[in-house]
Image (tube, rainbow, N blue to C red; front, side, top):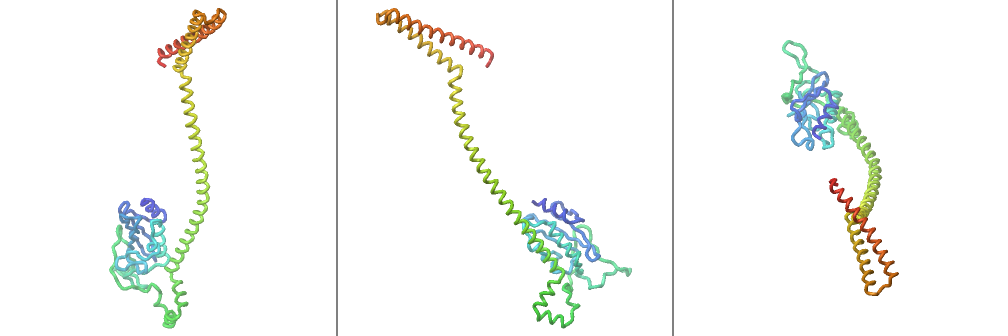
Length: 305
């Protein structure tokens, strides 16, 4: 998630410099013809904790702490959450400074700084980490110096006039636009979530039906597998051999019983011949099958089956 946030910084802003990998970055831009830089410092808890943004040189702006140069009151910083995009936050701040260039903290309105040779020279942001300029009193960022006493009195006494005046301020309009943009994003996200909820519910119902069918098929498989195992045991060559051996012994035993009955006078010649011949016939057939199966099993064992 930290890497994704850093990627958004590079996507939504140009002139992004890496000071310390994964920890500190620099964004350069122009504001009123001056080179301005925002130092982005990502603490160890980022993105769970908000980033630290420091502007250099220090600007006279309500968003900026004039003692440290840290941008503390920008909407993106005040409303920062783990779901905020670092790139969008920095982009909104740089655009505010580009569209409504604030004055430098140590600069007199309308008076550029001069070099020793008399040439006009705008202050430049140094390479790497920005260093704060000396602290001086706040400048007129609300444009009150251009108002007459009557205008100031009207602002002081008329709440509607004061509210209209505040709404026309550049940074207030920018904040309002950003808030509207955020509200639009929230509405779009909510609509997408509602649409996805119906799809998720449909897939959940389908998944439950598939799970029930899976359980039923599993139960059928278990029953069929048990039946198969029973049949495999019943029709295994070894089991068939054992059954043939039992049948051969039974047929042999019946022929002996018929012979004993005849010898003891309990059976006449006709009955004896019919029963004895039938039992010996069964014995012979079963014995032949047994011998043949034994030969086949022996051949399979020799063939390593």
